[in-house]
Length: 79
Image 1 (cartoon, rainbow, N blue to C red):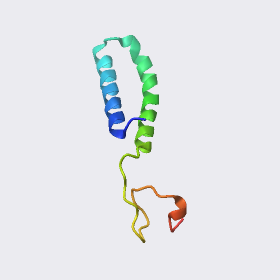
Image 2 (image 1 turned 90 degrees about the horizontal axis):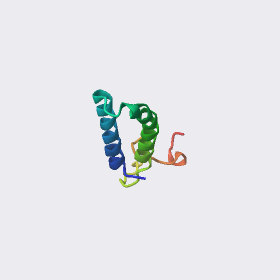
Image 3 (image 1 turned 90 degrees about the vertical axis):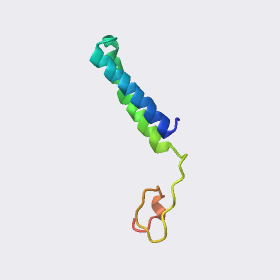
Image 4 (image 1 turned 180 degrees about the vertical axis):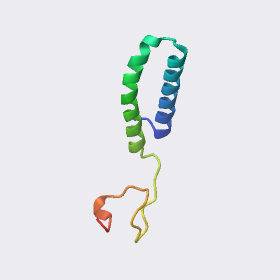
């Protein structure tokens, strides 16, 4: 999978092209197909972002209940 940054750039470019095609009327026959494909591409982008492990996040410190870093449920003290 692509990195989170590259997948966001790719989807932004795709959506800009899609918007330009709608507003200009160029290749208007492709717009419904691009609309259908965009739903799957957005799901792909979200999966790329969630699975991107290139950035190492710090572990929670002792006695911290919550943080932005993912942690296995069995290591959490209040669950």
